[in-house]
Structures are given as structure tokens and as C-alpha cells.
View 1 (cartoon, rainbow, N blue to C red):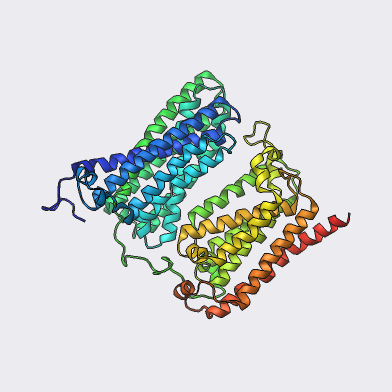
View 2 (cartoon, rainbow, N blue to C red):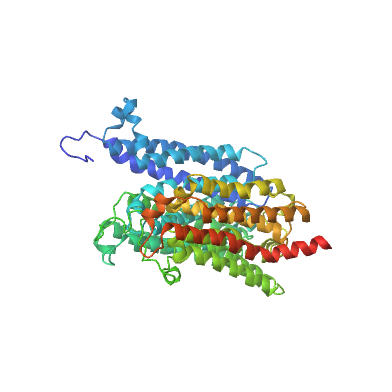
Amino acid sequence: MCRRSPGCPPRDLTDWGLPLARFIYDVCAVACVGTLLAAAVLAPAGSPESARCLRAGGRWALGWALAALLSYVLTLSDFLPIPVPELLAKPEVLAYGPSLPQTQALRVVSAVAVVVPAATLVRRLPRWIPLVVAVFGLLPPVYVGHAASAGDHDLAISALMAHLVAVSLWVGGLGAVLVCFRRSEDLTVVLPRFSTIALCCFAAVAFSGVVSAWVRLNTPSDLWQSRYGVLVLAKVAALAILAWFGWNHRDRTVTGIADRGVRHTFARLAAGEVTVMVATMGLAVGLSRTPPPPGDGGGHEHLVLEYALAPFSTGALISQVRLDPLVVLLLALPAAGYLVGVHRLPAWPPGRTVAWYAGLGLTALVLLTGFGGYARAMLSIDAIQHVALAVVAPVLLCLAAPVTLAAQATTTASQYGDLGSRAFGKRITHPTVLLVAYPALYLLLYGTAWLPWSLAGYAPHLITETVFLCLGLLVSWVLVGVDPLPRPFPGAARVRLLASMAAVHLALGTYLLVGPKVAPDWFALAAPPGVPDLVADQRMAGAVFLLVPLAAWAPLAVRLAARARL
């Protein structure tokens, strides 16, 4: 790419406009996520501020979309390189944008950002849905930044995803509290809620930042011998300052926020904290445009998987630990939340606590050890991961009665209220929906190109496993029957649902045992040394789908049969 060489056209507008556009992009994105967090989580249900935050989130999303389009043009000008006026005068050149990964990501972001305000206008839509859509919009640029070229690709991507989401919730949430609630009577409820979220976000930012630096920097001396490292140290200093602000908030304002003088103290501290946060976002823009120090080998350690994978052995399934930052943080939240609930209810049955942490432990085992690494290279390990996440772990987690614990451990001011009153929950737990969704997802995974797509990249694989975990939790919630349901679910319907799920796994297991090879091209490329031939590995996958679900569901079948006889 031509940058200031003698034949390069002047691009002053691009040189100063692109960082500015990215800064505006970041501010709008963070403000959108923060105001939607306030509307969905922080504000008491039904409060006027909650509705105002929802509308404000939609407006910030429109600004985010416009900033993404502006960044699209300036990024294209930077890459070609062509001055912006000349670029805009040539539509055929402007159409070249979709061929660049960076501009592709910005197009996705602009489309997502346009969906958010539309979602905020749907009255009966749960308010957490626009928030989830906005958080998803933060992620596409991660795949085309410096993380995409890191030697340990999946860890770099995971760390940056966790970092962006945590920063956006933290910074945007504080801004929303300061702007929307500083004079509101609801501040006494909102501030303690945000304080807990801010503490979690601080831990997530620190942990993901350490992982990001560890992946990109080759030696500790790179911290002070490279521009990238110096910017990392500047962000560490900013994080330390923000930690001081957070400690002062918890020590001086959270407990006494009802006092008018304390409210003024909160406003001053929050304004100073937001100022530091905005400066830190400026550092982040500079860091995103600064290449990390070159590595010794450069490039990925595995041409297909883009991470190192040792020769396969049974022991490697346990010994090859990969602490994926995003997964670690996502598992830490329910682990800590359940512990808080149990602490508030000393009489809570210990067996339920054991079931909860057994389910989380099994999830961690198949995602953070060698199972997680080999799942994208071996069909049998992928089958173990799917069965663990869609069948075994959901049964254990639902036996722990988390909904009942949450209802008993929270006060009447809880944000979400009775699950049975939620029309959305009633729809997704309709017997017909579950009877269709479970076989349909497996049919799509193994009958279309979904499987090789899900194995080819970190994000597709994580999305796929999340979809099957959520589906497993939904059907296990119904089958286990420990927690209250949003709708009555007759025993006969439970029996039909369990029989349908068992039939799906029997059919899939039989197909893998005697049918044609599944995604043979991918597994031939990705398989590490020590793997048995593809036919034997696929037969092992078929045996997993045949045996493990039936063993996990056998106690549920006995329980349902006993209830049917009563």
C-alpha cells in the first residue's frame, strides 16, 4: 500500500479523518450499549428512565451506523490509496470495498446498528434483545484487526472480544448512569446494580488485556521497546486510575447514595472517571492502528486451525489446557452468581449446588482443555463436545434449579419478575417449538455445510456450541421440571419430547456409523498426527451419539414414567 511515497496522491482528509471517525464510531457504540444496558438491566422495570434509555440507545445506534459508513469510506481510501473526493466520484472504485475484510466488517456493523433502533421500537420485545444485538455489533471488526494475524489466533480473538464487550458495558453503563439517573430517585437502585456490573467488567478487562498482551508481545522488553508496548503500558496506567475511581465509588457513594451530598460526590467522581475512560478510548484507537512487534516465526502455527495442536493422544485431551478468555469469563459469571445466591439462602440443598458446579465443570472441561482444541479437528471429539453441551451439562444445570434460586435470593425489586408472566418465554417453551427445533438443528448441522463452516473458525464454532447449549438448556428445563415453567407442560408432552430427542440421537448415531463420510475434506486437512483414520473416527462419533445421551436421559425417563403411573 502506498503511504506518502512520491507518487502517492495527497490524502490529508484520510490521515486525520480516519482516526477521528473511528473515535466517533467507538463513542457511539459504547454509548449505545451502555444506554441499552441501563434500559434492560439497571433501571427498575417500568420506570420512565428505562423507556428514555431505550430510545436514547436507538439514537446512539443510528450515529454508530453513520460512523461505520464514514469509516468504511475512509478505510477504503486508506487502503487503495485514493483521496476521498476522488473515491466518491468513482462509484466503480467505491464498489471495491466488499473485497476488503476491514470494510466487510464495517458493512456488517452498519447493518447491525440499523437493526438496533428498529428493535427498540417493538413494544412487546424483551429489552435485553436490542442489547444483545448491539453487543454482537461490536464483534465483527475483531476478526480483521491485529488479533487476526496473531500467532495464537483463537486466543487473540477471544481476548479482544471479551475486552470490547466488557469495556463497552463498563464505560457506556457509567455514562448512562451519569446522564440519565444522576437526578433520579431510582439512582439508589441503579447505582448498586451498576457497581456490581462494573466490578465484573473491571476484572474482565484486566484479564482479557493481559491475555491480549501475552499473545501479541514476544518478550517482556517489547513493553518498553516498541510503540505498541508503550501504548499497552499507557492503558495499564489508565486502568489503574479507573480502579482508584471504582474503589472510591464503592467506598464513598454506593452505600450512601440516598444522601444529597453523596449524590454530588458521585457526580464529580463519575465525571472524572468518564473523562479518563474517553482518554483511554483514544489510546485504544491508537493501539488499533499500531502493529504489534513482529514475531519470530510470523504467521500461524497451524495453517488450517490457526493454533498449535499437539499429536493426538488420550492424555492430551486433558493436558492441553487452553484458557479461552471469553469462555472463562462467561463461565465465571454463573459460577459467582450461584455462589452469591447460595450464600443468601443457607438452607439451599447441597445436592443442587453440586449439580450446578458439576455442569459448569463439565462445560469447562470440553471447552478449555484438549477437548476444545481437538473438537475442530476430529469428528469424535466434536461429537463428545456436542453431547456434553447439549445433553449432559444442561441436565446437571437444570437439576440445580437456578431459576428457583434466583427468585428466592432476589428481592421484589428484581428486574425480571415472574418468568411465567413473560409471553416470550411461553412461546419458546411451546411443545411444538421444542419438538421441531431439536431435530431441525441437528439436521441442519449434519445435513448442510454448517458443520465444516462451524469448524473452520473460532467464532463460528463458539456460536454453534452456544446455540446447542441454549437449546439443551431449554429442553432440559422442561424435562427436569425442577424450576417453574412459563407455561403448563403436560407429562405426555414431556414424554413425547424426550422420545423425539432420543430418536434424533439414535438416527444420527446410526447415520455416522453406517453412512457416508461427514465433512471428509475438512477433517483430512485438520486432523493432527496420531488420529485414527477418518472412518474409525466417524464411527466413534456415532457411538458417542448413540450411547451417551441415552445414559444421561435414562434417569429422566424413569422419573417421567413414574409420574405417568401416578
